[in-house]
Image 1 (tube, helix red, strand yellow):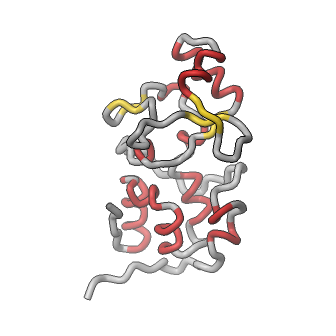
Image 2 (cartoon, helix red, strand yellow):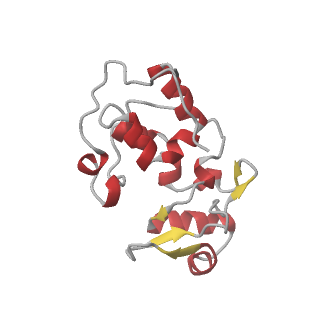
Length: 164
């Protein structure tokens, strides 16, 4: 019989849908206080996961300037309308990876969007101790592909199961 993962001494009360507003408990716009600070291992798992990297106006301007493009040209070539039609998101490749990912390196690392800078810490700080690990696995599987999160999970629970 396999080892059962459990939250050692942590409460796992609220379901994701009650903790975080939005469809299936998606992460809110406001960042939590970052009590858990995981160091990025540059595994690039988050950059290969299907999703939406939302952009602010200032991020569009910063990315465009970094690439030597006008805002208009950057928007035309590197963004799309968000699914909620309330702003812009980065385009992705057909395989869902980020258009700025080369190997395991971010070609816009110096000016990458805040959403990218905060992964996985924003999600871990919103969810850890608030939702059961299995709910996190179901609703945020990209966390379980992240090397830093898997190391954290192993330290906290004594075991880790990697998703395909």
